[in-house]
Amino acid sequence: MLDWKSLYYLHKRHRASSEQYVEWAIREMESGIDDENVVALACLDFIQPLNHFEVLEAFTYLLDAEVYEIPTEEEAAYAYVRYLFQQRTGQWKEDFDLLKRMIIIARDECLLLENELYPIEERVEEAVYGDNVEEWTEGEITTYLYEQLATLHAKLFLSPSLQVLMGEVVERVENNPTFTIVGTPFRLIISGAWHLRQGSEVMAGSGEYRFGEVKRALQNEIISHVDYDETTSLLTLQMGAYTLHIFQKLASHRGWEIHTLNLKK
Image (cartoon, rainbow, N blue to C red; front, side):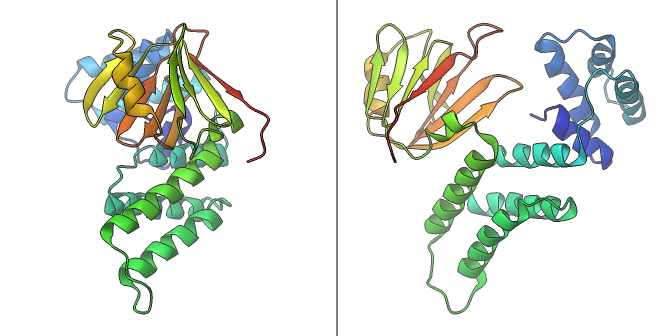
């Protein structure tokens, strides 16, 4: 979902849809924001189909009321690039299109990020269209692109503590008294609600604690992707075929802690 800065990026370029404005306002209300301008924008959802001029008018009132701090152009652009990173599907053609969109944004906004994105694009272009390079299978292209984008996403948008998780192996899983995932050099302690998915199916969660299955599923898996959405306080970890979602326990608590060992990697 779009956060405030990424929505503002689209707004300034006249690219935001009525649905994106209203969905953002609804999510803000659900998170506890009760400003009258946000509520007015969210309530337009009751009038279908949405009238884009009415939506823009409501959003303009919100801007004029200075409910939210206006981001700089660079902040807004980086926020939207982060949103695009979160739209990755694991299908190389779709993710390659996302990569090209990021490069265009970086180039238009003069972001240094372009220097890190362009070599990835160039390498995939060589593999797909080049004449004198080694042949890659579709699976190899997918793996390369996924790993490169996941690594860059972590470098750009994750805190140092979350970066520690990337590429590490789950050595063991504990349940005493909290759900804890242990590896080297980290210990992830989960006290909030969580659920573990295999594909689209929920395999287990904090409500129904099939710990034995969870332990067997995650043991020796590599953490290939980490994402933390500050807007929803949702931490997501991808481990092999499994996706772990960790939700906040209280409004003032993220639902997880990371402890790192002082080891040289």
